[in-house]
Each structure stands twice: as C-alpha cells, then as structure tokens.
Length: 253
Image (cartoon, rainbow, N blue to C red; front, side, top):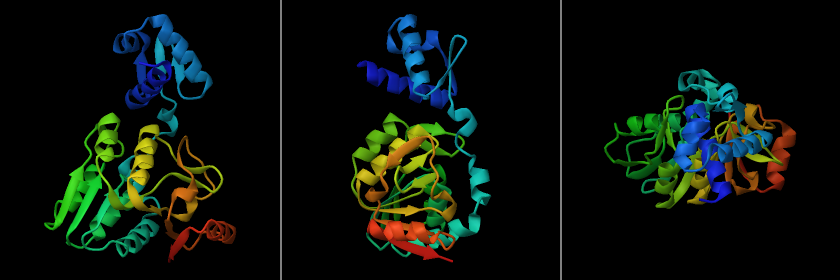
C-alpha cells in the first residue's frame, strides 16, 4: 500500500471511530508504530486529525454530522418546498440517486408511486420508498454512520461505481461560488462526489443559508452542478453569479 493511500485510510478510520490507538493502526496496516506516528504527525499538520496520547482523535467530533433528528427540524419548511420542486423534475422511468440528506428524505416522501429506480445510501430514504410498489430501490450498503443513518466507505463507493443514473439529487453543508460544494464529513463528501460523476444531470437542493459557507471536506466545483433549487432568501449577487456560470436556478417560496 502506498504511503498516501495508507494515510487516507487512517483519516477515514479516525473519522469513523472518532478515536483510534497507534498500536491498532500498526496492526491494521502491518507497519511499525513509529511509521504510524510519523503518519499521524503529518496528518495533524494538514489539519486532518488531532494526535492524542497513544493515538489520534477525529477533528470532526466537534464539527461533525448533525443528528438526523436535529436536521429534520432545521429549516424544515424550506426543505419541504425544495423537495416538492425537485419531485417535479422526476419522470416515470427515470433512474436517480438520492443522498442521505433530510431534503432527499422529503423527496422520497413526496414521490408518487410510479415506475422509477432509486439508488441511495440513506436508510431513511430506502424505508420511505419501500412503501411504494412501483419504485425499485437499490441500497449502496457500506459502513453505517448512526448520526445520519447512512452508508459510506469503500463498499458504498464501489457500489455507486457500478451504476449510471439520469439524475442525482443531493444536498450539502456549504456552497461557495469560488471554493465549491463542501460537507462536514469526508466520507459523505467522497460519496456525493461520486454521485455527481455517475449522473447525466445533478440537481443540488439547498436552502439559502448554505450559500457563502464552507465545510471541512470539498466535494466538487459549483460548475459541476446543472441545477440548484433553493428558497427566496437567496441574495441577488449570488443569483447573478449563478446565472453567469449558466447554472439553472429554481427558487421556491
């Protein structure tokens, strides 16, 4: 295993478990503890984790994923309106991917029972769609993140790579017109990046509070998005910049 690949895996393990010991990492990667300590020192300098006595802890612990219950009540009315607008872009026979955002869950709730294939890494989305007989649901599988009730990691990434969809519907924590889309969790960011790559068209569903902000892990440039659905509180300057980038903008009340 290359050094860069090992260090990437170390960050993923630390973020999944929140903390891990040097001795355990040494056994997992079959290298000396001194090698692991050098890896951790480098990763700490890059602000990807924090060293602790005998191991490392995740810096996402403090700014990590907000629990699903909390996200359900945050800007709920805007999310429901955005989801309803997204549903109008879905046609019978489409093959789509839905991420693990609460807005995607609202999309699942709003979807009529029609011939459709939905690929998702969200347990809540899959359960919601299981009530609709004509919708075929494919779950990515993977490592479960209890806060978001979603699957991430290598298995989820390999699962996504096997498919092609017409449309990807996703959300994120930050939309910066220069720095791009971002998310708190690196594993989620990697998965959303792949969702964009397997789709003919990507629809971003975000309330106006997400614009101008940046989270820990970068997903993709804004230019990779075909359409953004947001609420009417979006400022005029942002609207103008999106128009200049030729990104379709749908605004809901």
